Each structure stands twice: as C-alpha cells, then as structure tokens.
Image (cartoon, rainbow, N blue to C red; front, side, top):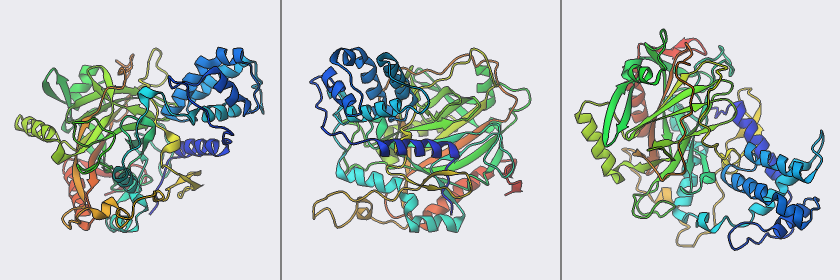
Length: 509
C-alpha cells in the first residue's frame, strides 16, 4: 500500500528539513531578556557565531527585523517566506553580499535558529503537554506506521494519506493538471502553539492516483449560515447566487470525495493545553494548496460556514470565522460536547442536514489572472514539522524525491509505573469499535478573519469539488467493525450520486 504525498509538499519538507539539518548548533546558549526578546548584544553574539561581524549600533538598527523574523519562524518555521523576506532586508541594511553563490541568507537563518533557542516571550510561553496526551497524540498521528491498522485498511482497499489530492482538473494517469489542490489536516499538540501542529491521517476510499469520486446533485450539499443566534440553511446553488459565484453551466452537479480523518482527541483523564473549564479538545486547521489556480473555499461545520479565497504560493490555513475573528477548529469526543449534540438534534428537528462530525470543504474555481482579487492569506502550516521527524527518501509512485512516513516517535523517559503500557493500550478494547465519533467546534480567537475580496462575478466555468470529511478518534485497538462503519458511510454517499468513478483512470466504481 502506497502512502503518497504530492510533489509540492514533499519538496517543501525536503528543503525545510535540509535547512534545519545544516544549521550549526550555537556555541553558547542565548539568554533571553526579561521581556522575552533578544537584546542587541545577544543579536550581535548570534551573528558573530555565523561569521557575521557587526557592532552594537548595527545590531540595534536591525533589531526590529530580527525580532520579527524570530517571531515568524516560531509561528511558521524557519523556511517560511516571511522569515526569508526579513532576512533579505537585514542583509540589505547591513550591506551584506547577496549575489549568486552567497551564503548570507543561509548564515542569517543560522543566527535566527540560535536566537530561537531561547524561550518565547513570557506572554506566549506555554508548558509542555502532559505525558499521557503527548504519547497518545504521537501514537494517533503515527497510525499509518501500524501494521495491524494498515492490514485492516488493505482488506477493504482503503488508502491512508496525510495529504489528499482534491482535484477539479487533472490529466489522465497523471499527478498534473490545470486545477490541482492539495489538502492537509494539521492538528496541534498544543492548542496555543500553531507551530506544534502535525499532519493527521485521512482514510480514503481509493488512492490519490486513482481518485475515485462521485457526481452528486449540487442541491444535496447544504451550507449553514449564522445569523445572530439563528442557523439558516442554504443549498449550495442558493449560496453561490448570494455570493455572486453562480455558474450558468456547472452548478447542476458537484464532484464529491469522502474520507475519514483520524485525529488525536484527548480523553477526560488527560490534561493538556486547552482552556481550563472546557472539555478536552484538540485544535486543528485544514490547509489547502491550489498550485497555480485560485479558488473560493467554503467550509461548513455544525456551528456554521466560513469563506476564504486561496491562491497559488504555498499551503494556506483555513480557520473558522467567528464574528470577524479567526479561530482554529477544535475536535472533542462527541460525548464531551453535549451542547453540540443538542444543537444537532435541534437543527435536524427543523429539517436541516447537519452532522457534528462532518466537515465540508467546498472548492469553487475562480477565473485566472483576475485583477484586484485579494486572497485570504491567514497563515501557513509548519511544513517542516509535518511528520515530527520526517524520513527523507524517494516517494513511491514516481512523483519525485520527498519524505516517506516517519517512524513512531521515540519513547520518552517515563516512570516504572507508567512504562508497562502506552495510553492507547490502557484503553479498554471494544470489538464494537476502536474509533469514536468526534464533534467539531472552534477554539479561541487568534486575530482578524479576512475572507478576501474582488471575487464577485469571477467564477470559472468549471466544476465544484466538495470534500466530505468525517472525524473520528481512537479509543482502543482499531477493529474490522471500524472498517465496516467506514464502508457504510461511503455507501451512504453512493446513494446520493448520479455517477461514481475515476476521472483520472477512466474507471467506474
């Protein structure tokens, strides 16, 4: 069974990992200033260790850009373009060589890595997650390394992926096309630290390369809008008209792909980085990379829908729009969110199509080269930490060099009493199910939400793709009963379709 990644993320991770591997370890630790920010003397020392000699006045002049680069690196990783942008300006201010063959930016990255060794500012410093949650998190995101789990998937011909190819237009038998999108689910080990996120595992009906999909009448896809305390339901065609994104020829049917996201969600007997007084939860974001095209994206969950414009460049994060503020989505065990289960019952009683564990990601293609179009750009995932400790090799399937699944995290030092069993082994094994249903909510606000602008009337006459994701979390060993549940859910969507098959391999289901 091939566990495949698209070339884009593979190259990004390959580059990020090599940069980190080549950075020299600092000779001396950097001591943080009382306010949590490096002083000019500390900046001068870090630069000196990279062979860049500057005086205190020069260090003072570049300090603002240095602090900004360190902040962005903590949030998004050293390989992020915003970090490199700041580094180029630092080099420019210092009059450093930046021509062909220059190592200036590389050396500046080393200085930033040195400065990052210090603790973050006091107001953002967070304690490490407790052992039980940490180990459960690691086991869950590394399920794709577990032979028993993989054999259960293989028996049903299901395919595990960490990046899903959600394409609107792709060439037959190829990974290339004119409307390609990569989608990932980034779950945070620590809710307050976006850089702690790693890719969750998704279980697809078929592989990325075969990409079996359904064609479903668009009116069967429902979008939910929050109007004060009320929830209003719209069919997808109705919502497209409201947004000024209706198509004259491509709104009768949509392309549907469905999958299960296996995410680590803490139990009540665990403690971790979530707000005191709230049910245990794990924060997550979807990311989407539409290569050279631009899409208007609608996400829809039990609490309502959010809109964003995503364009070419790199993976862009999707957030919940909570009254104009962006917040990560959260995953809780359904029994811990009685409020969401009650909301589900109330909305269903009104005839609405809702599900606490369902996440719609709806991609609406926009025209190319539209002037005045602004994308959301609300953040990028920590690509260099996608797998925790990625192993670099050739990816099966011929898509080029990139990472393959990382091995399970190395065991941490634990007490003798805690060493007998892992948290997952300690859970009672239920033959009925090893997965339990997850309820999707939202976390704390993390800044302003920006939809984007200039999209009205810019719909491309191309199909819409709807990715349907159901969230589950392990509560014990995974069994055949879980695979049967997956099969039943896939078949339920078959009943909605007018056609099912692969546009890539030209096979019907």
